[in-house]
Amino acid sequence: MASTETKAPSTDAEGDGSGDIAGLEAGLDALESSVVDRQPWLRTAASKAFPPLIAIAIVLALWQLAYHFALKPHYLLPSPVDVGRSLQQKWLEGTLLSFVWTSVSRGALGFVASVVLGTVLGLIVARVKAVRAAIGPILSGLQSLPSVAWVPAAIIWFGLSDATIYTVVLLGAVPSIANGLVAGVDQISPLYLRAGRTIGATGLAGVRHVLLPAALPGYIAGLKQGWAFSWRSLMAAELIVNAPDLGTGLGQLLEQGRELQDMSWVLSAILLILIVGIGIELLIFAPVERRVLRSRGLLVKS
Image 1 (cartoon, rainbow, N blue to C red):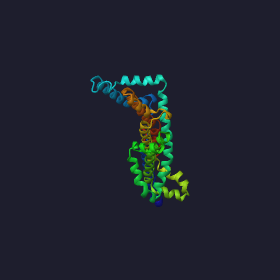
Image 2 (tube, one colour; image 1 turned 180 degrees about the horizontal axis):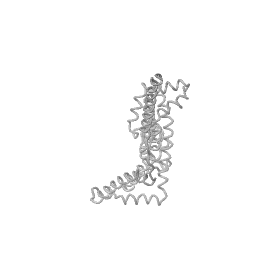
Image 3 (cartoon, one colour; image 1 turned 90 degrees about the horizontal axis):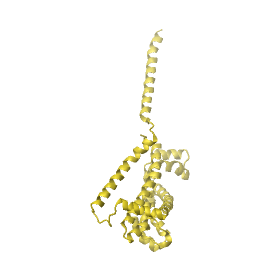
Image 4 (cartoon, one colour; image 1 turned 45 degrees about the vertical axis):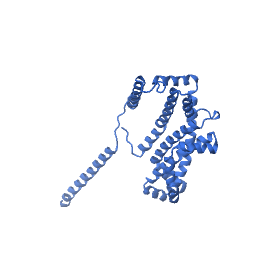
């Protein structure tokens, strides 16, 4: 009877302790999980599109005011309507999409080649200390070098050809991609690498299944920057490398407008370059980056 009385309180204490632990675990789970109320897709799209549209409207209004008060002569600063008419004319001529496609196809091909070279180079620099000590500073210097500086040398090497354009694109994008991958690898916890070696993930298997997945956030950032550099490098090359056999991209279109002293033409080309760059960022890189960050718990749906 005495033993029963002494055991009863301890049993109750154990029950209370387990209940407290269960409650604590439930509370922690509730903190980690986010409850998202489903909103209609139309409202979600409107909430995301509304701020950029407001910003665009403000820019157009300021532009129109500058045109109205003649801050510059009208032949130097056309109105938004004039630029729209120039774009409409190119569209009706059937040449607008060909200009865009020429530049986008060049940019895509140059970027894919840059990803391959930049990834291999980044892995070597990140994992081989002697190579990092030798060419790590050079990569950082190349990343800060303006891409247009390579155009004269590339013209001397390859003449007015596609090889010149792709050379400038590669030299502009590869250092950014390699440095992004190096930064991503440097942020990997050594515990992950040791765990990978423990389960036999070494060599190429370790790179594929451990190193690259763990470095993915930094690698994605490097890819985004690499695309920006490749697009800028492409426009710089197209501005200078102009030949009938090369076709007409957006950079050549911009240079033609300058030669004709047609500011509506020039601003139309600048607008197209901006739209393509922003569109690829929003449609390709931004969703991939959000998905990677969300899968690692670095971004919470709101």
